[in-house]
Length: 256
Image 1 (cartoon, rainbow, N blue to C red):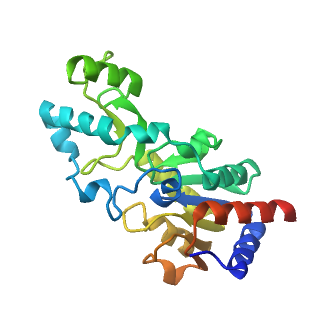
Image 2 (image 1 turned 135 degrees about the horizontal axis):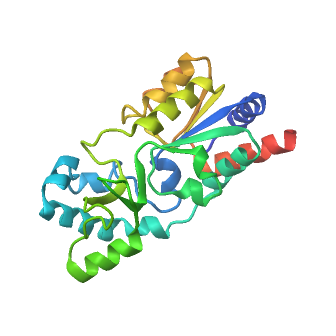
């Protein structure tokens, strides 16, 4: 469904009036770059059971299966490119309209589109590289692939001997404290909270729009499907994110 001209004008006016906006992005912004929604209809988690964090840590066999899945299903993420929605968000950050991008995505596309890494708050981590669970040492995926293809498993951390895992937050793994704290701070401080492509069903991350609204911010939701928070939003657009954000971004630039 396309947004109406009146909806786009309202969105542009809210953004023009804002002094500190925050973007909250979910899988819907990245599906327009060809990355499937893991939880949506036909998504990966509807076909195979997710691997729990404690099982990954406890079993070498589970770790091998996890990495095999990554190389079967995750490679497309590395090949994906930012779309017009990502680029519009990056432009708003560059212009000082958007103070931070809080994302549930793990694809690095906000950074690839030009948003400074320091302004991207990754609630669920990043799948484009790995880290040691012991010392935090970063390991690049090219090195992981070479190890897996040569030995059928991923070597322990070269620095401390710890278990190496993709730098994502797995099922059963604790949410990262620093990103959660930063997301809380940005949600409370903003005057406009823009949700892009999130079903707002995965908590605690989905609580940030409500937090921002309770702190006095306007709430805009752009998502193809309805969400449980549509009723409290100041504006809801069931439309494509790339086209919507490109239009609104251009309209606010022309008004400055």
